[in-house]
Image (tube, rainbow, N blue to C red):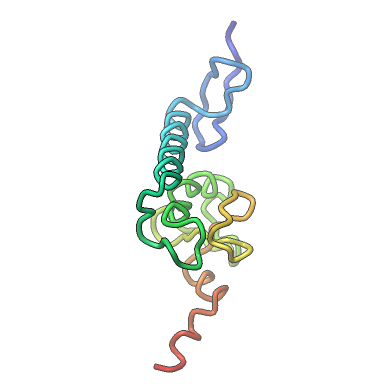
Length: 136
């Protein structure tokens, strides 16, 4: 039985699904499978007490894996927001000026509903980065 063409939920590709519940094109499905495998292998490494890598032991409870949220969520957020900053509405290319921002300012809370793309300028304003230079 042939299915109707459908738009991929992660990219603008239109594809013919092989089943009723296939939300992603083949390329995006493969990428998601790879990301999921990396997440699971990292969980196994840190569970056994392996080195968590850069960022471990600080205020960020999740260790180095939480820094990969840009890699994990950038494509989805970029597609949802159509390349626009969530704060000022400026359009940016995917790999140039957009940053993944945690709405609740908790870097360990990497849930898609807590993340948004903002331009570098808005991100610095949100986190009041200029305060770090007061003493200089």
